[in-house]
Length: 212
Image (spheres, helix red, strand yellow):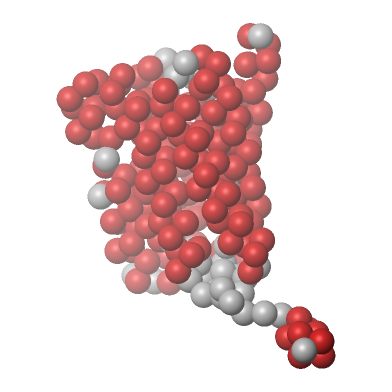
């Protein structure tokens, strides 16, 4: 059983470390940020910093490498995003990092890492929420990397399994929320691709007109 759990941690760590890479690469290559939320990038920086602190504080060392690598990748993504949008993206990132990303702070001050860990787990939903909202509100999603969200879904599922096995509520909450949030974005992409809601492929329109 321990071997299986250790394997899950290793796989989740490797996968989690690479989650931000496809999105950062997509922005760097295309210079398109349609459907990508600046607030999501900002809160992701903050929440990964919280996961790093929680891993160190609670002695869950598997969280340390994935948090460090993720912080670096989100930092690179933030740089490319701002290089593309200019100062326009800075306000959203600041809101994500210093407002949404500070949700665990009062819990840490009130109850230490035991309580803060639960808040960090729930805050994974706060981290992904701006990305979900952007994917549902933005008419075109050419800047969104589906690979990032496939990785996010798989990683969250692995941490959910591990958190359940070791009875860590923070990881169970984070895993559950992560699976749901990533699934929403992947469903949006699967249904419409990078097109707006309700826009049919011209070939489908022709087919409908012929059969009517």
